[in-house]
Image (cartoon, rainbow, N blue to C red; front, top):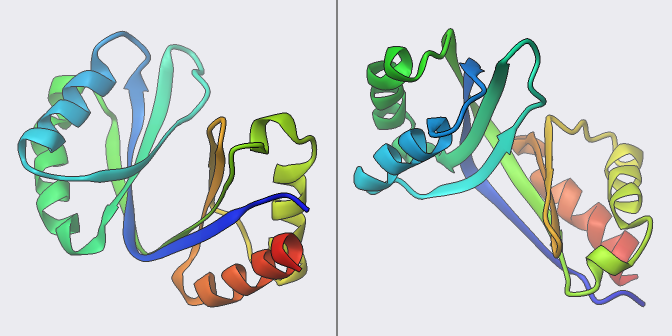
Length: 153
């Protein structure tokens, strides 16, 4: 059986910078300013560039959302974002393991387990050793249970 660690965080919010110019330095400027303000970013997802623009989403502690929204409003024009949106009442659920990158079908199993539990996925991000999904906060416990059943028997 695949050795998979399951984690969740239900105290997060998602912020999206919409239609940001797809050019070097935007992410550095955005996340550099967040870091200088002491904001810990838990997840970053950049969409696919379309007509030279890209959406840039990130998850942060929900209790910092007000501060972050104000900061993003200040730098929106500097980075050329068309608009900013945010969503509270979300959670992150993740699976992680050393062999994930070498094991075909792991992401599909995760998505299927969540689907079978009636849980919609808002956003997905992956790395060599993890898959993380943004879901509705009220589904976090169900998601963890579904993933444990799928990966830990």
